[in-house]
Length: 136
Image (cartoon, rainbow, N blue to C red; front, top):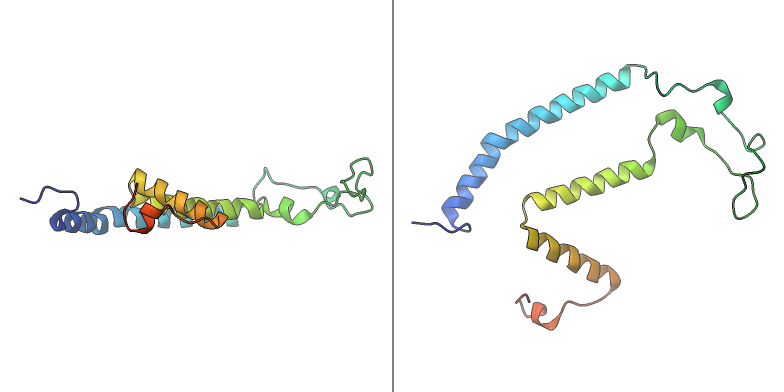
């Protein structure tokens, strides 16, 4: 009888399927990725080898390369040693959040949510029709 996507029987079936079919696959994938990451952390990497001269200080920086302020460009060895940048980690966390949101939202719901977040960040209000509970 209930053929609608929003029907309780369909919702219940999808929830069961999500928990019993897809959840074990996701858990196995996470375990596999964690194991690979642990192995990679223990194994020495040959492509990230740095020599002793890579540890530069402010005095040994090339003077020709100057920033806008005129001060010598300062290089840090932390980023070179780890191979990762803070920006990369922040982007992946944001991307994961967006993927989780998209997983359970329709395309239009996701667009509306992003549009509303953008309006909120700019300090604008939603249109009058949307404020009353109806969407345009």
